[in-house]
Length: 365
Image 1 (cartoon, rainbow, N blue to C red):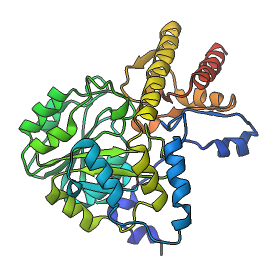
Image 2 (cartoon, rainbow, N blue to C red):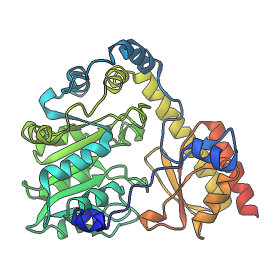
Image 3 (cartoon, rainbow, N blue to C red):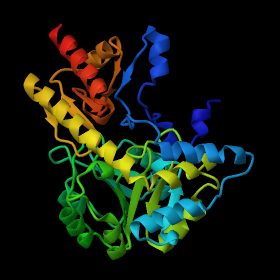
């Protein structure tokens, strides 16, 4: 007997999510040290001092279960963004929430809409629950919301929108999203995945929580993995109508956020100085890479995230492997249907320069 034969039908054809290569793995494989990792859109500054102090304070409580309701973190989010705590659902990173939403609202025979070149977790969770993926062709590497509307049927249960989008960095304006929500039937859940929203300019940032108050079927997901630097602790949150949040909490695993994550998140959510430092470094680093690509005549996709995707006009995997041998880890995105592209996270200035120097050498050979 093969256990594959008795697995869930959607799981049979599922391939695991491929994360960015860890630095430790490259050290083991090639014996390289002083590695520059620009593969996973991580915060190059590491933990803020506020997060470190909150973690240290919490260490003596680790024999106790976490607060399953995440009371203090929910209060912090609610206070910062003028929300009610009963609108907030906590997740083990926003990936956890994206899957939780699918399990809550979609099942076999239902349809889930998302864009070509959108975050790869959307098709993964859709297939895992035996729902039908409706993949809308991209427009200029981003979401074509008019085409989304044209693909809505009586079987549509869920729509995922990443803004900014990963891995292309494309961005929808507030006006575009609001006009779209006006036309979506009220019973269809729209998920606005804002994992990278803190990297957008404040003047152009979508007022997503205000939109949520206007549209009861809108769910906004955010994470503290990126701008806040808590990727290793895995914590995110969703903001929704309280009735929807109640449904999420029926599906959500108890204690899905650990004590250290809750403590660090509650502290760092208020650390505006750290957040501004991260955003400022991102703007300057983006300019650094864009200037290099333009000097080299390389096409790139303008990005609103903390990463940028470049078109090498040739298979990217050999170049990715050559960069590994120079101690630089970036992200090949052939799994997204973009075999000639690499995605590069914005690092510290010296890390960006190490990538520039390595790619210059590789392309010259």
